[in-house]
Image 1 (cartoon, rainbow, N blue to C red):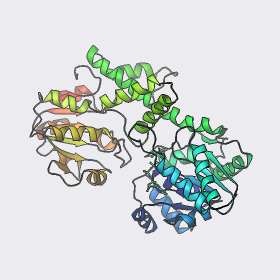
Image 2: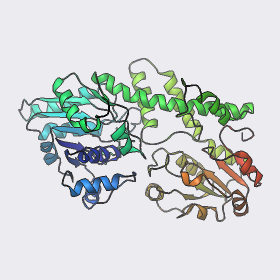
Image 3: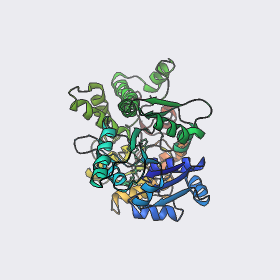
Image 4: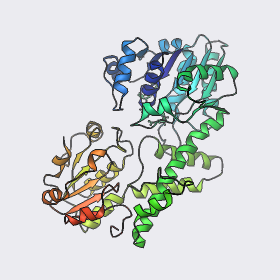
Length: 443
Ligand code: NAD
């Protein structure tokens, strides 16, 4: 099949590369000229395991191309995937300007039947808006061309995006059209061989499914964080509680790891957008609003613990930070807890020496050169002259630490573990004060 993908971001690039890999002819189009020229030159603008090889193999095989020419891209594919960003607007609603811009572009350039596939995460009712935007452009051109709009939300996780795309648990398509169903079956056929993962449903249900899934996952995280905070006040150990509840198959172990809050490009904005949608239809979603409030508070936890450890005297202190990405195996720092921590530390007059295996460049891009930020090439380099160590991201490389050496290196014996990576006894045995999330005496 000939497939056009609007956007070369995390979702667009992974979708394009994976669909090309199973033999489709894919053209990815982006407005970001720099991104497209880097991609053409074989450079991948994001860190995503396995993506570089997948892109270069399929580029070399002539099945995957990149362009900034929207007219050419619209003419190319029967399927027109929209995978542009849908960031939070000021009021928390999803900003649809990029999605609707693409819809207009398609309407301006199409000259035969197209299936517009909405892969961006968008509020219920967006497919109808896309349809209207395309129809208006066609009308301006005096054309009466047929087209369909369907919803195909994406469930991949950054850091495991290719695996998720290829072996995801479901492929959801919201449509009422048999023609679209057939085309989407053909598009995803190679990824749908073991068992039928395709779920067809109404467009509005498909749109809501994506928000409901992310809101529920975020709810699990905020729930366990709430329990962790309670555990601190009740003298309980949340890791024991986590084991205790996770063993119940109705609850399960996934997404109940206590920590310093969720971040990333999806959960925060999607939770806010769903709360906003609920408000708009006059049915406030109390649980979802609370999920966001708990997370907002949780992201301040690491700073609060440092503040407590240093009796509020943080000015002039140097804090080592391990992990900048919002989660391991990505360089994405959007709404990462590390950002809330660093910004609070800078406001308090402290300096930061940070290391992330993949996100140092992203951090440099966001914050630029500043006197109170040093980005280290290795985790050990952050400890030189540091008064405390804080763990923000649970990269595997941070799980093993020589605590005696750490005790000798840090100017003050303070470790704040935002991901509960260590056994409190091992850290304390080395003479370090250990502040973690929801663990006994670390209030
Ligand atoms: P991203 O920020 O990585 O990429 C967005 C891209 O869109 C950018 O490259 C930008 O230049 C491009 N763009 C903007 N306007 C354009 C236009 N008119 N034409 C062509 N390109 C244009 O975004 P992302 O993380 O890939 O997310 C895309 C969508 O997928 C969002 O709705 C997001 O919520 C959803 N989603 C993301 C993930 C994830 O893990 N990142 C997972 C599932 C769903």
